[in-house]
Amino acid sequence: MKTRSRKRLISIITFVVLLIVGIIILIPFWFLLISSFKSAKDIFSNGLNIHIDLAKMTFNNYGKLFTNENGIFWVWFKNSALITILQTVIVLALSSMVGYGLAQYKFKGRNFIFALVLIMLMVPGDILLIPLYKEMTSLGLMDTYAGVILPGIVPPATVFFFRQYAIGIPNDFAEAARLDGAGEFRIFLQIYTPMMKPAFGAMTILTSMNAWNNFLWPLIVMKSDQNLVIPAGLLTAMTPYGNNYDIVFAGSVMSIIPILIIFLLNQKSFISGMTIGGVKG
Image (tube, rainbow, N blue to C red):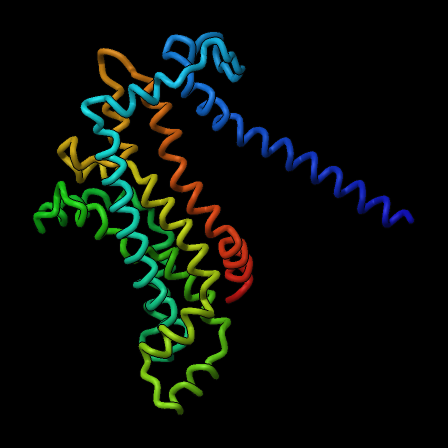
């Protein structure tokens, strides 16, 4: 009886703590959403104003966002969407093959390559900005989609995750397929890829989210306003002559919607993949 009461008390305390943490996390999003319907004057009146005042809330900010500079927001949206789709597809294809190879094949130098992956996990990406900038400049890829996408097509964290997931899948499937005459690429594509579906779901969300929200590197690579992505484009609304917070807030809300849709479509695979991938290894 005491054990049951103690478990119930722990459950209640856990629920209350998670509820408080959830509210703290959601307050900035609530402020962003509510402010996107307010005028720039009202956004910062009375400090952090999270109250709903229907009399002062309109869709004017979204109208200004969509018509600003002849609708350049949709150009930024298209740039972000193309870069996110291309980068996500390339990252998933290459990282899954590398992770699968490190997990399923025994070859000379495998441990050394895996050690390099672990070392790269510890290297802050910011210290690579200058070398990458010089590399993209020498290749003539500045102000292009390729200049934004290429440096991140095989992220070590994604390779590590796929390796950890694939290492838990028995090698017997591959051996049986080889006996039936299947080639190595066919084994990966038709046997192991379906079994790694949860890992693909989890990495689809994380990779697309990173690509969509990437701010600093696209800002460095892209030079013309027509090639900017949404985060960098919204920065141009912050001028020395006035910070257009109404446009920035409305644009920020619009930028959340695609990632939210991707998460809702892949949430089951995401939870399953993160749970299984986190305990394998």
